[in-house]
Length: 317
Image (cartoon, rainbow, N blue to C red; front, side, top):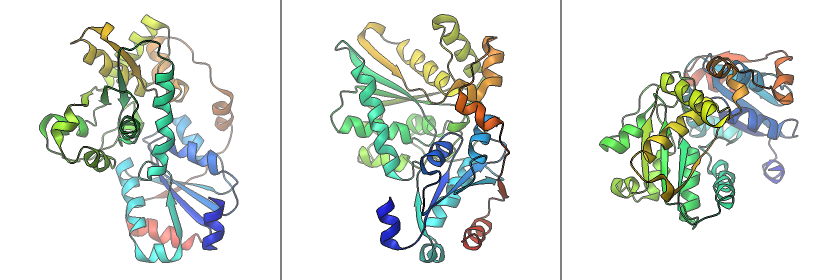
């Protein structure tokens, strides 16, 4: 990254559309790095309080842009910036969410690490909480590279565009709705095109390796409670959706035939209000999360019009 900055003799501008978690991970990764300016675009009022504080309290080279819209609006702003000739001529642009394939490569190792923990030869299935479909696509890459994964379950919330696509064969993007599992609140998942290419645009091939189920907020609450009651594990809303999808899939099969892995998404403390009220148990707050709560929020509010975003980027140089 440092080489790229010096080679172009311009500051690197990283644009990140986030529905909650990606933004803070990227921000902390590039925090204080000379020659790099990060702009985090997040949907106003549609991330949890702790997630928002993670996004808006760093300062230095990290700028939080609070967009009046949905995650899809944030993602469209970033995508449009990359094809705008004036911005491309004046800014050295990059991204770090899953519209950039380099974000998916490290996620492949999650799947490898999961399989390393297994100790028998049963079929391996992964249940993946899915929104923008980046994590699922990384799993498909891992399978293409030879990892012995037999099947994937794409677990969606009420934003079930991909679930409907697998069922009907028709892709109908729509405005996302807000849910407890906000990182999956995506109405037009950008990684679907990559998935189609992996299967040569053959829906039958995709269906042979992926199934999808969707669950609403009431279901999610039930999943959080059930996991805690059965396993004494505190799961976050996204993981709960993954658990429910796995449970539904296994209901039609002999469970002993499978090694089943649910991909978790975030620490439950980020959603402490809904989780604590569900399990009637206090969640221990990690120190790094607690620290951001004591800081002052700094965000710049923008509407979801591209011209507003473009003007901001040009005038912030």
